[in-house]
Image 1 (tube, helix red, strand yellow):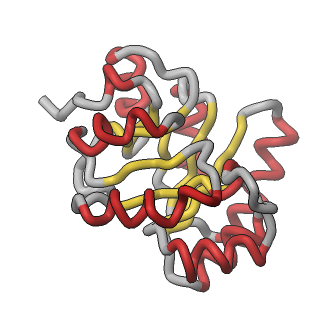
Image 2 (cartoon, one colour; image 1 turned 90 degrees about the vertical axis):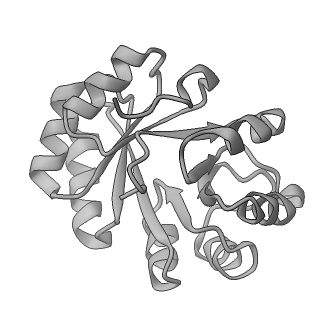
Length: 184
C-alpha cells in the first residue's frame, strides 16, 4: 500500500523534515503542525517527491470538523488525512484522499465503537495505537479486512518487526533511528 515502505516517518518537529525526506519511505506523516506553516510545508515535501499523510486532528489553529477537512483537502492538498473523526474522514474520502482512521486501543467499548465507525467510513487504512499489541493488529485486520498501520510507543526494530509480523502493512514512528529500516 505504501510502495513497500515498512516505516513511515512521523514528523512532530519541523527540525526533522530534512531527515524524513532522506528516509526510505515515499510517505511522510505530519503530526502537530500549525496552520500557518502547513501549505508551504506540504508543498516543499511534495516537491521532494514524497507523499504527505496529514493528521487532521493535530493541526494547531484549525477546528477539527467537516469544514476543516474541506479546507485541508482543497487548499492544502495532502495525499491523505488521518483522523479519529468520522466527518473528517468521510469528507476526505469524497475528495479522493487516502483516509486513515486512527484507533486508540483503550478498552473493548472503544474497539467496538471503532469497528462500527469503520463500517460506515470504509477507510483505506486503520492506524492502531499503541502499535505494540500484535494480537490486536491481527484481530482488527481479521475483523475489518482493512490494511493496518501500527503506531505509538514503537521504539525498537524488534517492535517494528513484531507489528509487521502480526500483519501491519507499515509502522508510523517519530523515532528517527527507525526511519531507515528497510526490508531484508
